[in-house]
Image (tube, rainbow, N blue to C red; front, side):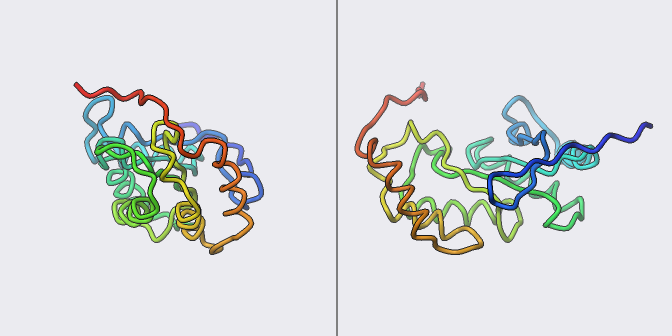
Length: 180
């Protein structure tokens, strides 16, 4: 069997993170496109790592939290040191709907860490922000998200986030999600 050429690593802004040029989107591990057995999930993640992929992206919404659980099991089964891979998850969209409140964002990261069996995630993103009620975004949400980073609270970043959200605060858009 031929050895794979290592994937190029690219810097993510000025974060110090070096992400593989190809990432692993873990939505299929949540049975989004059909059933995936745990053994197949582990084998797939193992193969991805062997090919040089170090960036894994998931979301509590994928499979109603199943994607995070399966990714966590697969990463743990690898036995690879935590600093050798990058994990991104999201907040704001859940099987119950959208919620970007500070309380839910804070609870979301704790729940994700438990499912992923990790002490930290490298990247936390707000998912489908345009479908949420943007009046939930205030300095508390920004502060909760920033405090989740390993560097702690950053007043300049909080101010920048508030400035970005000012033009859309209290606006709503129709949701693209329809209930049957």
